[in-house]
Amino acid sequence: MSLFNVYPLNPIAITKAAGSRVWDDKGQEYLDMYGGHAVISIGHTHPHWVKRIEDQLHAMAFYSNSVIMPIQEQLATAINDVSGKKDFQLFLCNSGAEANENALKLASFHTGRKKIIAFKKSFHGRTSLAVAATDNPSIVAPVNETGNIIFLPFNDIAALQNCFAAQGKEIAAVIIEGIQGVAGIYEASISFLQAIRKCCDEAGAVYIADSVQCGYGRTGQFFSHDIAGVNADIYSMAKGMGNGFPIGAILIAPHIQAKFGLLGTTFGGNPLACAAALAVIEVIQKENLMALAAEKGTYLIGALKNTVGVTAVRGRGLMIGFEMEAGLEDLRKVLMNDCKVFTGEAKPNVIRLLPSLAITMEGIQLFLKSLNAAIQQLKQTHS
Ligand SMILES: Cc1ncc(COP(=O)(O)O)c(C=O)c1O
Image 1 (cartoon, rainbow, N blue to C red):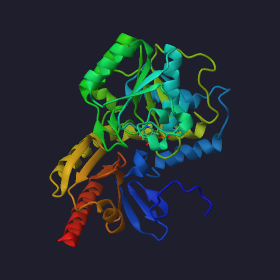
Image 2 (image 1 turned 45 degrees about the vertical axis):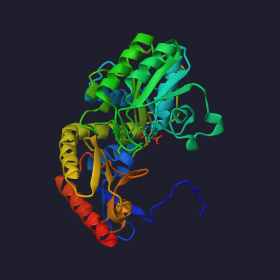
Image 3 (image 1 turned 90 degrees about the vertical axis):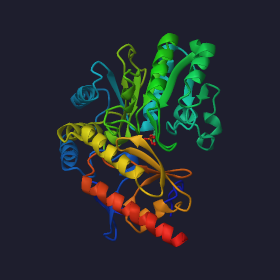
Image 4 (image 1 turned 90 degrees about the horizontal axis):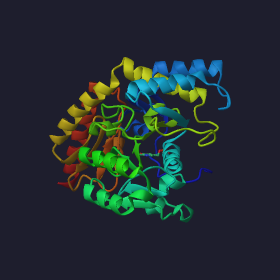
């Protein structure tokens, strides 16, 4: 074994996938309520997505960002259209961390300032500034430590206002997840997002909406932050954007101006990634997936609230977290090993559901049946 051992692995090798189903190398089928960590937006191996990538592969796989790329322009127009941010500009990269890294850097260039406000329990990625703005000291290397990040309590308007009152002219950006994912599914309140917009406007700071996990239609709106009815200055995206093909991006408000050399990347915006991302948007629109995500999410959240053994349910659309009563700590393991259902987790006691937006009602019913069976099984073991 020569892999660098950084992941605690489930002993399962997935070799085939379709829609919200995956199969291991022994042919065992699993229901995927985790979407490979919120990445599978339109369903595994969606035929339109496969064809778009295949066609692009045959036509032209790669050229550098030194020539005109019509497919990047098509993608920018499609994102303007699906997100409703008609006059925003697109910068393409390869991952969520890179998207946030570029967003933070751009905010600093734009304002000429250094300080960043981030929030307790946030996760923004593992590159240098993104990880510094992540509230988890165990993944911040000594070289990434900086005095430029101010961590404030989440959803605390007074703390935000006090910080701006004291240091407003030094603040380059506020970065916030619309729904904190890794933390265990906590929604930013509407009034908090509005307060961020107001503070940033007054101080000339940049509001960055980290939409890497909560965006791309998962909550029923393209960006979950849009629930507050105010625009951010920069939206970061990745995960669901390529349905498994690596791609990330930032969507930038028109008042932030580009300059040659300000940002750059070799692979960002490569034609294969753009083809995958265009396929995702085409399917989201054709299959009405945002509205369906909202509808199915509401149903699933309602059903979870009525499930015996579940003590708290949070989230919106198909970004859901729930907590269990004592004695059910092994629920996720039982779901995977005995019921053949993949879910996500957040320590210490949250199960995260991040299925494809195209999951069927049949898939949701199967999940609920499996959940009840797993809870029963655990309760019997303990009685
Ligand atoms: C909110 C959020 N931002 C950023 C990232 C980092 O994305 P990536 O792993 O693609 O670098 C993640 C990953 O989980 C995330 O959940």
